[in-house]
Length: 347
Image 1: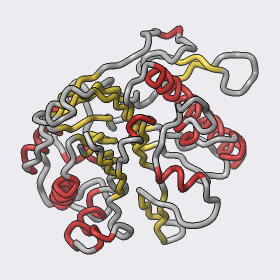
Image 2: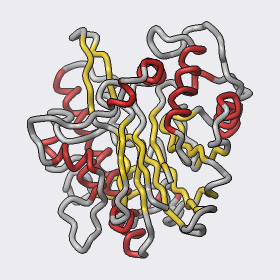
Image 3: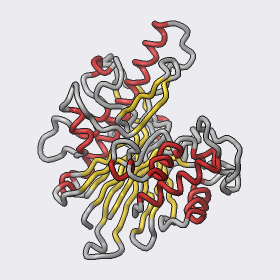
Image 4: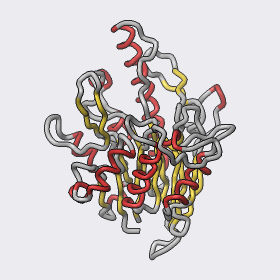
């Protein structure tokens, strides 16, 4: 089985309100890429992935006028993909949904959120991801009320074919983002807002980690995947908190076989200087150069790690197979500022 995660920049801008593809020569929201070219590039990338299920980060919007599911299923149909069914969980207000696109002949999938519904009062016990989490963020003996701007997508996935037919997996699709310090007018305000936003991001990671602990305690097979927008050495504030979001969700330091595993994260955590894998490429206009970062992960529970899974980043420059195929290499660059992470499991 092949499962992937893919953050697609400005995917929402490629569809009209009816969920139809805007396959024309108008500029997409990506710099110097037309909508037609971005759609064609995405078709090439999805075909190359050939995944049974793809967790899409920054999927098209769902609101009173637009439908994530309609847009993604129209996209799959237009590109001739076998991942023809789409699933979302709790919609958000950012125009960047978290969604699963999957092959219904291989898998069945349903949104299956866990945790209690809290309303505005919140709960300290890992409530449902559309609720409110009460936690003391700054050790001042008063609880803060934390919410997700993009509630993680919890999926119950069942294998329909092969020797493991009936096997159930839990997927949690995540997009944790520390907001930029909008509205700050000087260096002190920028620092104060950046630290506050990062603290909230870490609280969200604690929330996700508590859900992970619940699944592992129940003996469930689990995959946590998506864009964590954080990692070892990503910014100058990391030292203030002791641990990155990646370390919190992995369960670094936890005992009793409750650590999740991702080889790219592991390599980054043990190397302060030296080579690491990267999954995203951004242009820094003030420096007139590109920066690469490790932001996207597929973390597996101990039982799945014992199946000898194989990870791969479809990176246009770092993956030899991608580099040797000019059409795919060009498509990966045009499609998004992130590159897909793919996991092969013997199921």
